[in-house]
Image (cartoon, rainbow, N blue to C red; front, side, top):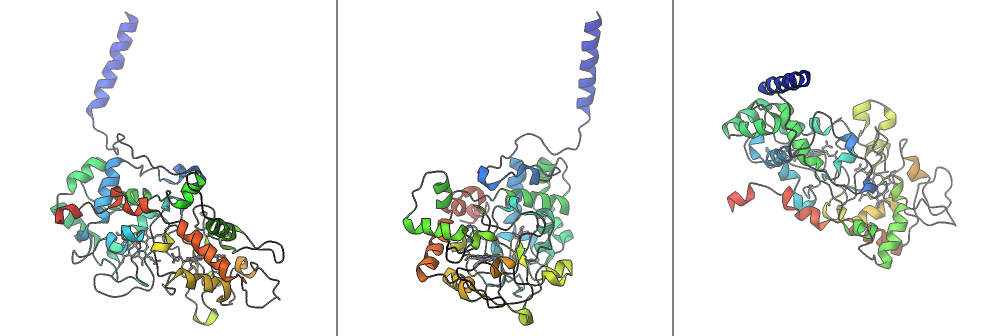
Amino acid sequence: MRTQFIIYFLLLIAVTSCKEPVELPPKEEPFELKAPVYFGEFNNRIPEDNPPTEKGFQLGRMLFYETKLSGDNSMSCGSCHQQQKAFADGLAVSKGIDGVAGQVSAMSLVNMLWSEKFTWNGRMPSLETQSLEPITNPIEMHESLENAIIKLEEDGYSDLFQDVFGSPEITEEKIGKALSQFQRALISADSKYDQKLRGEYQPTQQELRGEKLFFTHPIPGQLRGGNCGDCHLGPLTSGAIDGLQGFHNNGLDNDENMDEGLMAVTGDPKDRGRFKTPSLRNIALTAPYMHDGRFQTLEEVLEHYDQGIHQSNTLDILIIEGSNENQAAGERPQLFLSEQEKEDIIAFLHMLTDENFINNPQFSNPFENENN
Ligand code: HEC
Ligand code: HEC
């Protein structure tokens, strides 16, 4: 009798607690983010209040390509972040809906799970906040969030928000969350270099030399190196993840004409000219280069690091101390690479192109088929 009563009681609790629908993001259909172990742990970098789900990813993908988010319905995130260009736009500096050019180059969107600060000067503390900024930015999509939300409601998006978040209201927080879910899934890990790391591709001698030079810190007379891996770390080839450690001054300008960089965020003069070290994945597809798009080719980039460094008070110690020859203190830092060595490094950079990433149908514009 007693056990029967307990069972009955438990059933009663179960039934009554089922009645009240609780507002929680749906737990079903989780979206599995897959990445090679050599990228490092990432689950701890997904915000607890925005776990990836299949429906969240799909909503984020629609919003990413949704032109209604812009003032004149002409531009989406995908206008400046184009999949075929590894989510950059091929311009030195981006132009928004009003044709006004910004100060900086659109960043390639890739492997952002391994990044804590966003934009060139690091002013955005999370992907969720960064994802809303371009919508309201007057020189980008130039739309108010209130208007954007009204347009999404008129377009029938409320049902999709209901499916993903358990309630139909469209809010900026939810837009930011969905866009982030899509962007966190933009993982590029199938380049020739990854295939090499998995033992599926046998690199050429030149590619092997380039890889070695890229990751070697030179010791004059003993070890030749290109010193790139000092800042573009490991297989991700991006800056250190934690805090602001991945921000460096790589010698683009001298003190007189230097952009503020990280100093605009911290106010610290020691941060002048320090910028986010970008990932070099798919770099062959994202010319022109640097935050202001000043270099047209990878050859020009190599010339810069080899013999074009500008000295300044904040020039990075890793550049000052990275040379293949003994340089006198105060002398302008140079790498002293041979032509062959520069070509080798460029061959390695080409290994980082991931055709499957730029052609992955999951990341493409879902509205494009409608127009065709
Ligand atoms: C007009 C062109 C343009 C549009 C439209 C645009 N972006 Fe960007 N995006 C940029 C530029 C330029 C930067 C670099 C900004 C900076 O450093 O100040 C950038 C940077 C970013 C970054 C930072 C990446 C990193 O590694 O730090 C993210 C994320 C991003 N954009 C997402 C988006 C999303 C989401 C949208 C749509 C809501 C969007 N962008 C719309 C041009 C654009
Ligand atoms: C001291 C750290 C440091 C070293 C060493 C370094 N880089 Fe960079 N790299 C950066 C930073 C920071 C940026 C972004 C600078 C900017 O745009 O203001 C950058 C930008 C780049 C870019 C342009 C990326 C883009 O999206 O526009 C390329 C290409 C590049 N580096 C390649 C290399 C190569 C090749 C080497 C070795 C020869 C190297 N880097 C050495 C820190 C470094």
